[in-house]
Image 1: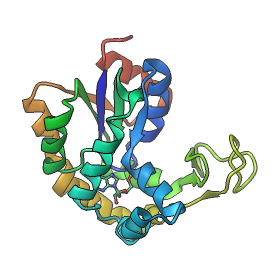
Image 2: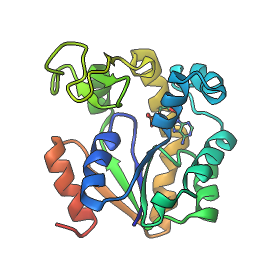
Image 3: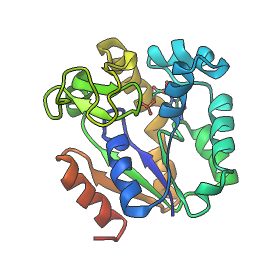
Length: 210
Ligand code: AMP
């Protein structure tokens, strides 16, 4: 099954994707995670995108589409994939439709107030990418990942100014994808406000798997 996870930053797409991988046994492809790992490696791609990402802006369509095209030819996506954070613009969605049409697009619905609360407290492991939260899910040892021992830090783009920019970018450039996919008849809405376990149930129901 080819899935796309759509929703504003902080909707919990990444957290849900980890659960969805267990349920559906297909790989999770996060363009944001690929960019962050390129930045950590200080590769050419990383050097090119770091300032853009830190400011909460979008990487250009051409670079992002190329990255996803390269990823979607690997063997592990033959049975499906979860695209998380891609597409984020209409040109990206059109490009994707030309080489790999999705079966379903899951729209994680959440108000801005919840997004601000979630992103303000989000902490991420620099090594394995696991998400923590200062109120809901603190690592057992401060600053250290429970799962791999990596450093737990605040993403530069989770700082207040960048979050405002990301929400604005979401509204103007990404939210139009909701109608784009609704018109194609493949969009399902999932209420992303409750705690993770309930969102997982909502997600299963939306896919007809509960
Ligand atoms: P995410 O982890 O999905 O929140 O992505 C983090 C950042 O990576 C975004 O704020 C963008 O700067 C960049 N990014 C991720 N996916 C895309 C995309 N599909 N198009 C453009 N930029 C992206």
